[in-house]
Image 1 (cartoon, helix red, strand yellow):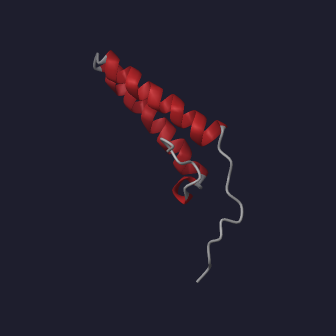
Image 2 (cartoon, one colour):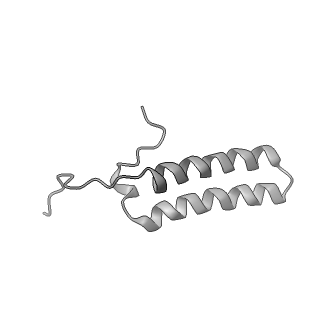
Length: 69
């Protein structure tokens, strides 16, 4: 079982993948600014994992069998 299934159609648009990674790092920065270093490290790690899975190692699915009506 994968933690994050990057092949899911939800992750197909690039803007969504970038937004997920950016939101994770933004939340880490928010937690760090409030002095919560543990939560900042947790969300930073989530951002790193999402960045790797959704941006670096992402392979788009071609011909996934969707029908147009």
